[in-house]
Length: 345
Image (cartoon, rainbow, N blue to C red; front, side, top):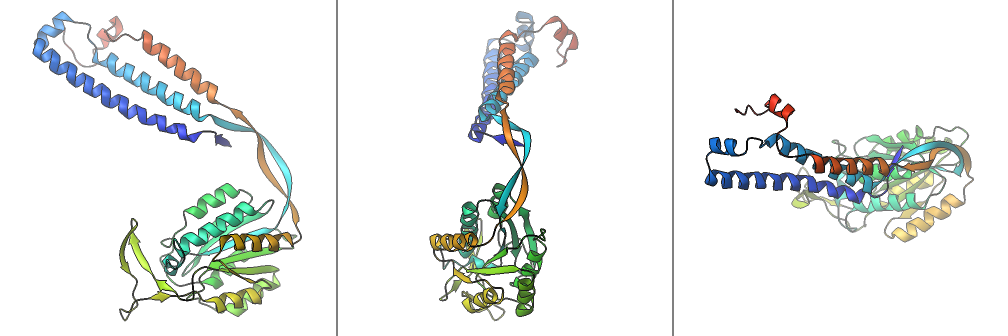
């Protein structure tokens, strides 16, 4: 396990291409100047110890020194102590709708981005809980297994988009079925599933799967994202609008928030419907819900002691810089014998 304390210093690595570019410019200028001064044969007689290899070697040494200095400033840390800690919390699974209707922009910046913002803020408000993430459209797929690693969960959450599932639709039933496999602790009394969706185009026998989840002790809370007025579905490429989605009759598709469906799902699994318009109100509601539940104690392993490793890279950078000072650009006896560039005497 490792940490990067100041990853912004990786930008120093951009100095290496700049060094190479300057080196090439200097070599070009030097060659043109020498060609005006004398012929190639005469130059070999005037300066027989000229060495292109030594110049390239000095550039390589200097580039490695810059790379080592960059990593030293980033300060990588390695975890040296793995400790098992006791935590109390609830198993929370998020089922995120990634169907095309989530591209609608009736909620800024879009339903999809709003949904990810809501889940991110909810995760930020959690303490000792475990989280898992499911994505679904025409089918459901596991995005993040149940975990205490909130940073990884948010990282995978940020990459979710409407292109992850080729088949369209809203397979909420599949998402609920998949969520049932996430709760791997039989002693966990409180299991929570948050479905974040606009509730449109749902498929399957909803009541049966919701009832089954309720019997397994899973409480389902639905968060509605969108407006009842609805909006068109923009199809973009690289952020540029290409067209608006149309149906088989070439009619413009208007997608609307289906509140009744989401309310029905929540009611059938001992949960409640939450309006996702206001992020603050959603967080407050979710926090109150989770705080009112009994917490289950479980173990989690984490690194509690990280040691700095910058000194190794700093020492390497200093060594390379000193080596570069003593590395002369003229040929040496051993290099003359190698004759790397087939240079004649």
